[in-house]
Image 1 (cartoon, rainbow, N blue to C red):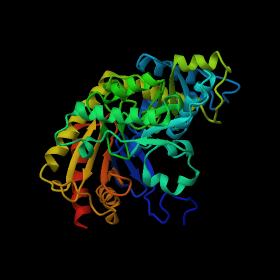
Image 2: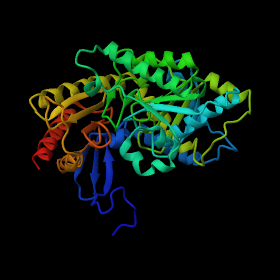
Image 3: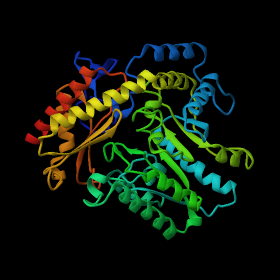
Image 4: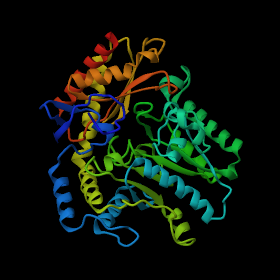
Amino acid sequence: MTRILHRSIGAQLPHAASAQGVYITDTTGRRYLDGSGGAAVTSVGHAHPEVLAAMRSQIDSLCYAHTSFFTTDAAEALAEKLVDLAPDGLDYVYLVSGGSEAVEAALKMARQYFVEINQPQRRHIIARRQSYHGNTIGALATGGNAMRRQQFQPILPETHHVSPCYAYRDKGSDESPEAYAARLAEELEAKILELGPEEVMAFVAEPVVGATLGAVASEADYFKRVRAICDKYGVLLILDEVMCGMGRTGTVFACEQDGVVPDIITIAKGLGGGYQPIGAVMLSANLYASFANGSGLFQHGHTYLGHPVAAAAANKVVEIIARPETLANVNKMGMRLQSGLEAALDASPHVGDIRGRGLFHGIEVVADRESKTPFDPARKLHAKIKRQAMARGLISYPMGGTIDGIHGDHILLAPPYIIAPDEVDLIIERIVGAIDAAIAE
C-alpha cells in the first residue's frame, strides 16, 4: 500500500534505486535506458561526478539562505554564467524552482513591466494551440493543451490562442515553408488587432514544441516574423525553453537556431539536469530598468528561489553542457537518432512523421500513413507504447491528443547528452519494438 497520491492511482510503478549515466536501476536490479531524460530533464546524465562534487561542496558550506536576507555565491555565479551564454540582450536572471514557476514569473514580469511604464491597460496574453507552458493556473491558462485545460477551464484566466507552427498537418501541400510562416505570422497580427494592440501584453511560444506536439520546430523565418510583429505593436515576446532549451536542440538556447532574441525566456528541466529542482527567467535590460527605475522591486517570490544547492548543481550542469564536446555529441547523436529512426520506420504504415532537433525527437504514430488518419483515441495507443517500452527496458515519453487534445499519438525521445552510439541504437531498437507491439495489441 502506498500513501502517495501518484499521478495515476493504482499504477504499479517500479521503485527506482540507483542511476548512472543513461541508465536507471530499480530495486529488483532491472536497468532502464533513459531514452527521454525523464521529461527531457536529464541533460548531462545521472550521477555525473562533477555535479555531485559541486553539490557536496555547497552542502558543506551552506544549504539555505532566504533571498530576502541574503544572496549567495552559487546563485550569483549561475546568473553570470547564464548571461554569458545567452543571446545578447538577455542580461538578468530570476531564479525559481521549476518550469511552471518560471512561466508564472515571466507572465507577472510582463504585466508589471507595463504597469511600470504607465501602460496598465495591457493585459491580454496570446499563445498557441497545442502548446504547454506548465501546470500552475497562469501557466496552464497560457498553454493550449486542451486535454490538460479542460476540467480547470472555469478557473483559468482569459487567454487567447493562435495556430501552432505544425507543418506536418497544417502546411498546405502546395505551400512553401516561407508562405506557411507568413500565413501564421499574419494570423498572429490579426489576433493582436482584434484584441486591440494597445491591450496585448505578450506572445508566448516554445521554439520547439515539446510534450504536446512532440519536438515540432518552426518553419522558415517564422520566429523572425513573430519578433517583427511583436516589435511593431509593443508586445513582449516570451519564449518558453523549459523543455527545449539548455542544449537539448544542439545549442545552449534553442532560439539561437531561429535567429531571434526574446524579451523574456524561461528555462528549467535540463538547467538542473534532475539534480535539484531549479528554473530561471532571463529578461532584457529594458525590463530590468523599468523595475529598477520604477517601484524598485519585482512583486513576486517563492521560498526556495535561488536555492544555493540547486544553483551550485545547475552551475556545474550548465558548464558541462556548454563544453564544445557536449554540444558536438548532442548534434552528432541527434543525427544518428533521426537517421536511425527513419531507416527503421521508413516502411511502417503507422509512422507519419519523425522530427526534431539535436537530442529532441518526436515520432507521430498514425492509423494510416497516406491519409495521416490518427488512431481511435479510445485505444490509448500512447499508453500502450509507454508500457511496451518499459517492458523492453526503455523510458520514453509518449503522449496522446497530439492533433487537438483528443486525437493523435506521438512519442518524445530526449536522452541525456553524454550518450554513446550503441546506446542511441538501443533506443531505436527498443522503441521500434514497442510501437509494433502496441499497435498489435
